[in-house]
Length: 152
Image (tube, rainbow, N blue to C red; front, side, top):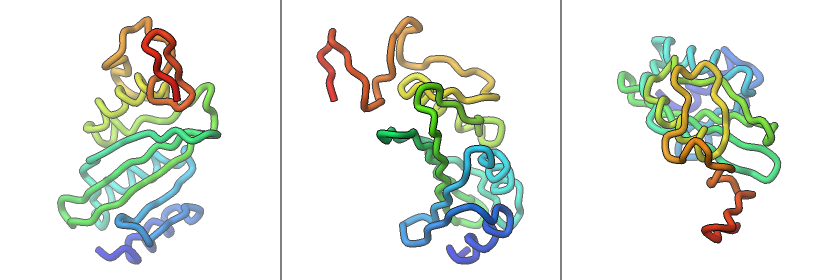
């Protein structure tokens, strides 16, 4: 499906979404409170059928964190990126998409471990790389480790 048609369908569902078509993938910016609603629609809508989450990542900006979801429809062969901002850096929380795409499981556990983002409704949210007593989040730009001399 063409980017313009995807854009039209998404804006019909969430009119306040911000959509960019000038990148490789159509990119949808949505409020974090609407993430699960949009994700469920993208998966369940026969016209969209985004059944495959092929990448989920976090980005650390100076004043917020950003979640990025790369989606693919194996049925229609179209792709999409969904982004959502997490403004609270001290207590970053967002809904899990694991109930929608089971492939989010390890992505979210890794992000929880290395960025400190808590995913509500994740069925098994626990550290995946670091020890349970580890202090800090190594992929955050403000992280320092005086023992291993990691500074940014």
